[in-house]
Structure formats: C-alpha cells, structure tokens
Image (cartoon, rainbow, N blue to C red):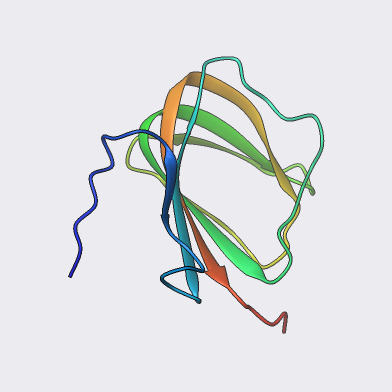
Length: 103
C-alpha cells in the first residue's frame, strides 16, 4: 500500500518503473497557457482529473469542454487534442492507460 499527496510539486506519481499498465502524473499550468498544435498519444487512453482551476480542451473535430475543479475529461486512444486556454491556474492529474490496442 502507498499513499500519495497531490499537494506536493508536479511530477510522475506512478509509471513504467512501478506499474507497467498505468501512468499518473500531476501537472500544473498557469493562466494563459495554451497549445497551438493538436497532439495525441498512441497506445494510451487519457484521463484528466481537474483538482483546481479552469481549463478548456479541444478535440481535433473542434469539440470543446470547459473543465473545472472536480471534472474528469477523457480522450480515446490516440485522439488528437489540445489545451485551448487555461482560464485559472490549473492543477490536474493525468492518468494514462498504457499499452492500449486500438479497436
């Protein structure tokens, strides 16, 4: 059993070294951060759990979501996406299911 404190600095919580199937990282972005290009992560499903703040995500088909504290945003395996805007300093957990095989 392990316990993790999300109030600490951003960084990897679990990954290949201690869990071959799951990657969890706390990530923070400041107000005004945005991404110009879409990106995707082959062979992984992504979940963003917003712990604090407000962030807008956009998928390649131009669907957007405004995620606030307590929100969970999910991207399918290799689904292109980007952060459009961070409206309030945001703290998130990025959770990836690794080794996915696209159906």
